[in-house]
Image 1 (tube, helix red, strand yellow):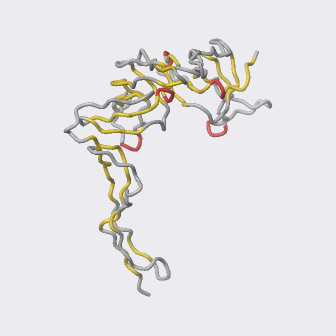
Image 2: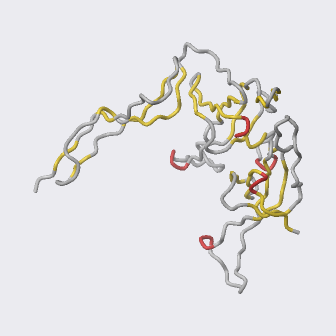
Image 3: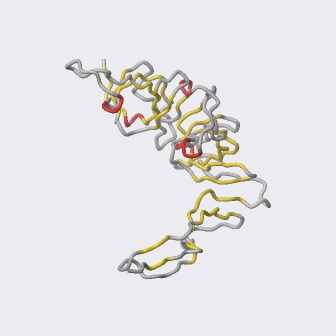
Length: 256
């Protein structure tokens, strides 16, 4: 029995409902043909081009980007193409960066009649939430426009253990996973449960209330805490230790 052939030389999704700005154009990824369909499947038809939006590209005629409000423009750190031992990494194995350098900041956040200045300054090396912001290609380099609240902390060295958390963030060194069960059985790596207990390394100054005042956190460095298992952003230190940065509201209890 013959099969129906479906071809798609140009497949695209309309951007009619997307907001457009002069000088900004989305880069596109085009998909090849769909291959062969069996009888009884979709009827033979063609589409006018399926496009997946990636980073927004700023036209060369624009020479600067000025973030507004409490937004920050960060130049994304280049993805590592080699391991520490010099082995080349395929693109699928390269971890997406979660850090970069602040290159521009907005005028600040408005709370009532007050405007609070942005606490991060240009030139600062920052770590941000993994899925935050909008990626922009500007001057041939990848940038991210995100809100200040999406910045996890400032990193003054190359080691994540020195992260200085911002706002209501708490930075925790994760406890080692248990090697044995209560009955003394050795656990394999696959059966070890991810710990949700750790020691607080550093805390942010605290959240800002509606009057613009900072409220200090009740958690202190040195506390051993129990936190929500699926919260925050995970990091691996240069010493092999695991760390997590999360909001104070995701810390459920202090252990003693």
